[in-house]
Image (cartoon, rainbow, N blue to C red; front, side, top):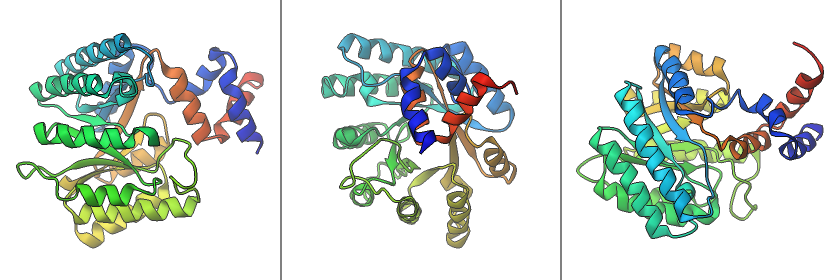
Length: 303
C-alpha cells in the first residue's frame, strides 16, 4: 500500500527526482543515447526494437514532426548497423486527432523501413484506440506484409476474439507478426481482466492460439512463470525457433533476460529514448510500484 501511495505521488514531484527511477528504463534523451544502448545490447547477441518516446499529442504539427523524426531514426540506426527494428505508437502520429492523417504518417514510416528491409511494430495503446489500431494494422499488413506487426494485450477481454478474427489474414504466405504482452494501461473490469492469475491464464491461452495458427510471436514478459510455461508450450508443440522470440523492456529483469539469451533463445529488448520520457516513466511506476520505495531510499541513503 505504501509503495502504491508513493508511486501515485512521485509523478507530481520534480523531474530530477523521477529521473532517478527513469534512467534504469530509458536509454537517454538523444539519438546518440539510443544508438549507444542498442550497440551494447547487440554486442551481447541481443536484438532491439527502437522506440521514440512521446504519445497522446495535441496538434497535427507534432504528428508530422514525429513522422520526420522516425524517418531520420530509421536511416541512422540501420545505416550504423544496429540489429533490430522499430516500434511506433499511433497516438504520437495523430490517431486521436485525425485517423487518416495518422495512417498516412505511419505509412510513410513503414515505407522508409520497407525500403531499408526493416520492420515496424505498431504498439497497442489504451482501449479507446484498439479498434482504430486494428483497422490500421490490417490495411497496412495487406500492403507491407513483411514490414509491419502489431502488439496484442492479454489482459483485454477482447483479445482472443481479435486474434481469431485475424487468424485467416495472410498475405503472400507471410505469417502475421505479433508481440504478446500482458498490458499496462489502467482499464475498467468490464474491459480487462484484473486478477493476476487470470491475466497469466489468458496470456498462455493467447500464446497457444498464436502458435497453433502460424503466427510469429514476440513473447514479451518479465514474469519468470510465464517464461517457463512458454518454453514448455514451445517444447510440447515442437515449435521451431524461427517462429518466435522473447522480448523484454530495457532495464527490466536483466538477469532473467541474460539467462534466456544464454540458453540460445532469440531475445529482443525494447529500447525507448527521447525527451518525452516523463509519461513513460510514470507508467512504469504504476506498473511496478515497489520501485517507488527504492527511489525514496536513494534520496536519503548512500549506496
